[in-house]
Length: 94
Image (tube, rainbow, N blue to C red; front, side, top):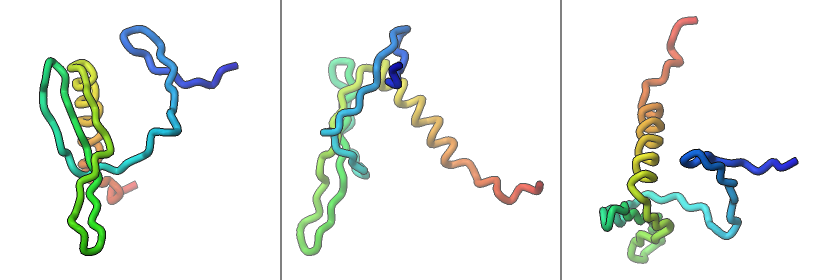
């Protein structure tokens, strides 16, 4: 029995495969965001401030998204950001 996770794209199931060689990064700088040939080009960088050295924005992710993928990412991010910005409801009475 397979335990492979899948994602459905346009009615087709794709296996989700993790690549152990792809490093995890925590980008905090957007270095590129442009539209070219109906593709959204995004580059993200991690800021590195190390002692007396000049601060660096080290590129850690480059993405080229078609417009369908970009719209999907936008919808997901909109939902996550909206949820994250909602006020905490911990002071609600029981």
